[in-house]
Image 1 (cartoon, rainbow over the protein chains, first blue to last red):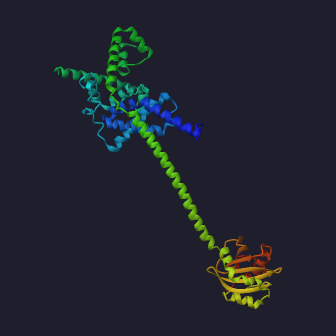
Image 2 (image 1 turned 90 degrees about the vertical axis):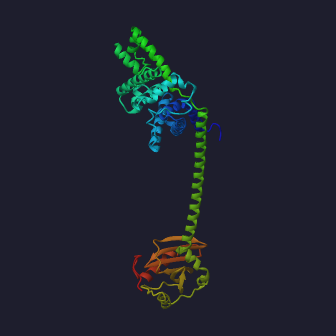
Image 3 (image 1 turned 180 degrees about the vertical axis):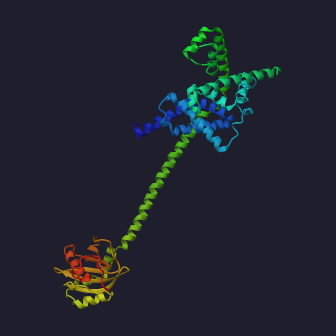
Length: 180
Length: 246
């Protein structure tokens, strides 16, 4: 085929778009997936499935700014599908600190580890909007659209998420200092 | 915006750039301090949420994508090849079926019947009406009309598996083979050319009439067919569906 073949050019353009998309967002997707499922291997699979699904539908992505929310939406659906399929015990993670490389990093005993533990203790209804806001960069309106809720309700969830997170961190700190 | 509203927004959306929010932060030292603490906490939170990403994640995704793509392309090619093969097989089977069907068509059987009977075309002496009627009687058939003039040959034959009355009628000095098969009825009149024979098949009575000539023209067919229709179905009986009396 000649280099100027329009079909080949289209294929190459799609491939380049996909590669750029993957390089730009795979890390964020992985982190979001990790916070959804708490398992490194599963998070990896989720990201891969998300990107492969994105590849199949890449022609529907017209706006580069919409890429991240689009991918996160796909990822959440993949996670929900996986959960429905395997009935994995993924929701009841509030009291179970995940055990994997990400968790057992050198910062485990530091502030980062405290916050991570506290994050897992947050109810899912608070944790997920907080993740969408912090990792996803979603606005309240976008989170509301993603979760099928009203922006006011999301605002409340975000407020309570941070309140509870700080309370949990304070509890941890007091416990660590023998104050409780 | 009051301090309570500011703190509510600060807790829910610490990075808010709402003008009223920003203005209050500038005007209220306590809320500005709270904002500073909130930003520090957000930084800690973001750091905690930023779990390490496995090395080679992007490469593995791209590998899975390109491999899957190649597999899909290969699968697509296999499907295309399978389809092409299927089409060829279908065409082949269709061709064989068509050949089988064609080999058993009335024109094919009629033409195949000719070689052993070819000498009948050379007969020029007209038969008597009784002799022709006797030929039909051999197939338990009775003619209803006059025997066409110039009938030089009659014989009860088997054309393929069909019982037939084999006749030759001369028209303008040229012989025309007439095969009447009382038990085989074609749907419609149609002309054909096979192996040097020019022919026509048509429904007649309860069966079919086939006309053949090796002289290359169908010119005498209409007249010959009309004569035999009168003989088989009776004078004035133009209807193709008129039954032939046993």
